Figure 1: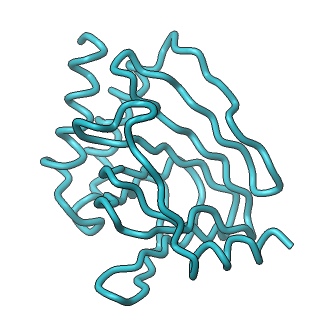
Figure 2: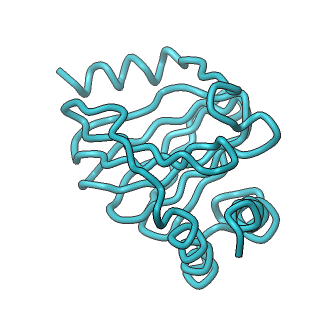
Length: 168
């Protein structure tokens, strides 16, 4: 399978096959299948450390489609995120355990996340991770404007404040 075909497959799997909500996105066999494609796609790509602080590290793999597959190592006891994006993204838990906070319809919704779980963030949905143990995540932006430098992030101050407090 060519890289472009693999990326299209991943996008299709996470949105069409897994469904639009986290509840539809927990089948371990489907997640393993998608991870297999991710693994095949990333072999041979350069991994770049793009950020490191007390909360952990963020790595970037630039795909041939000009999209980044981001891999996060998030340390227990910290919060990360507190923003939204103007494109959809999928977050996949590779290892660890955390609470995923989202701001939906004017209220905070918390989902418990474990390895194999994934979450679709629609454009404009504020999200934040609260890491209960060391956790590894994969994240990819989706859609026509998902290329590097084509999408934007908007801070959601109620969540950002909590992220900053977790770093004290």
